[in-house]
Length: 124
Image (cartoon, rainbow, N blue to C red; front, top):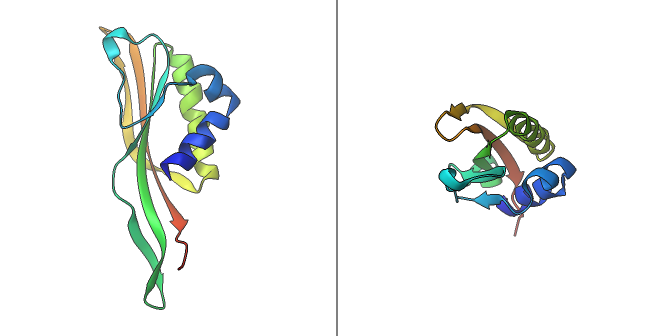
């Protein structure tokens, strides 16, 4: 699922323009030397079996936090909003929770949103 999210993000023109090469899994940027916008995809839980029928699970439930770090609040907000639309298209919804903050000392804006979604399991 991480790969699908990553591919959907880099396929977007705005995100590709503003954060190409700076979309990471699990890795957080070194904030003291950050000059460009970064996106971090962080799984918050392992996939969980969900939606059962005939004594089998049909879907897996995922939860991710996607963070946008930027020196520009305008870029941060535009990218975070675009990510929300992309995640909706991938059948993930904003699960509430998250962070909207500004680090005064480093002048970095951060938007962290949590997304929950399901994918159907390939039956064997």
